[in-house]
Length: 132
Image (cartoon, rainbow, N blue to C red):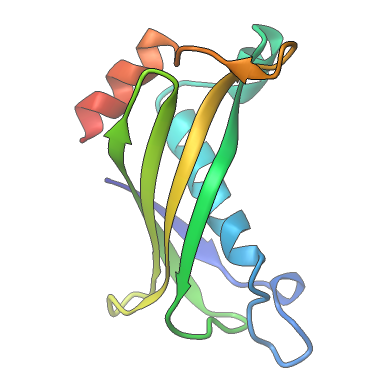
């Protein structure tokens, strides 16, 4: 499991100080990106090699309203690893362990120039596989 801290800024909220629903996807995206970076994988390098990761499917369960100036962590784990895709289970939790949002996100690896699926690079597969 990978854990990444998230703070709720004013820009993340609606007029009532509650996190706008689409911003939970941003929090989860940031955590997945930071996980790759912690493995030494830079997405800019992947893009220069015609490799990209795209979200194919996302399912979110909103449990509690996250609010302005709250601090959380995003817990991320890979629950399925295939040749061209990964399935992540992610949770936004506070420091007491209360879950505010939970997501299952399917991410596919593609050839950017062809916009077609391609195999996930072996070094990335090995890193995610060892983290499971």
